[in-house]
Image (cartoon, rainbow, N blue to C red):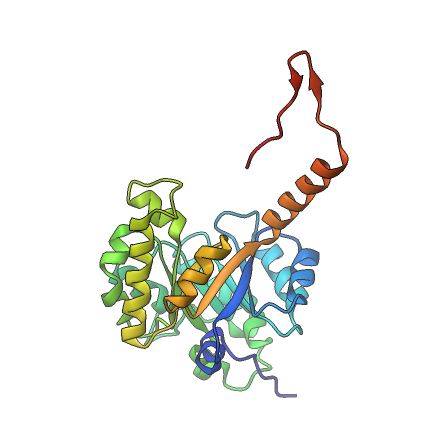
Length: 271
């Protein structure tokens, strides 16, 4: 029986009449991923760069999310040809590649998703979930159309090169990471700094001129709306682990009296 894969994130972005809102999935839990997949959000980012995710847990989360009306992107820990091949063979259709600082980085990311002669992806479709074990007709010939590549702009060097990165064939979108960007600008922990905001704005403007969708990470609602007004076409506004951390802290704060010491009540921890 012929099997069709879902539209890519690039396809959905191209057809959208509004910006797409999503959240991080960092827990490594298929159950949490499934809960978030049914939330009504547009997209989820399963993260393996800063989260405890390996091939098996990513596969389990893809299976848990499958069937829900939500787009799924997966971020590998590094822009690595072998790792990208494994992710694609697992059935990852939408990649967010971190730390793309140059045109060469962007070209390498795209090449890792293409079979020769257009790229360097290893051929193993008969063994892979990506091709549903060769149940998808002509997967080898059509695979490039089932994959989207979003590259992450998160350094001062990447911002400087953003116009050239946007021009790389096969880059479907860019995504700006203000935290690492701030760090590279000597502003560690200051992603709300005016200079950082200006750098993000520069990337959004460049993407708009190039006709390429651009997204950004922004947990602060005011900042998120600022970037949406500036032209962001997709955005991440929260994370499963952050929601759980802040929610459990709120319960503790509401129902557990502050500890009392000889010096008086212990002040609450500030985050």
